[in-house]
Image (tube, rainbow, N blue to C red; front, side, top):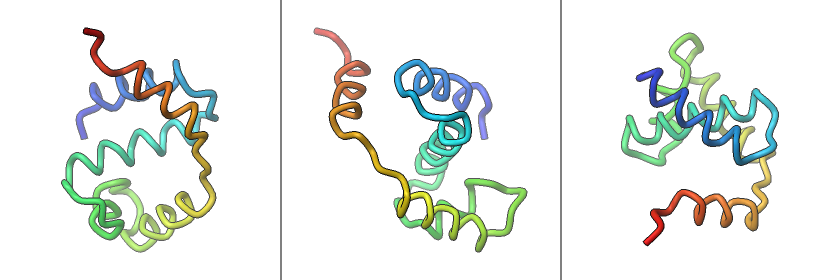
Length: 87
């Protein structure tokens, strides 16, 4: 993983969302892994998200993340508008 992209993306999320550090780290890893593997399949993502853990553990963590994480869609919409280029 390119740590420059990870750090930059985490900073953007950190400046916009009021999530705890663990959630910021996980969502950043998730998005970078999505880009790396070019799939939304959780098994594929679990191969890349954390190389220090077993793939099955990564897969189960991804499942738990999506079961428990509730996105505030208004907050997300404001974020998307914030990152879109201004014309």
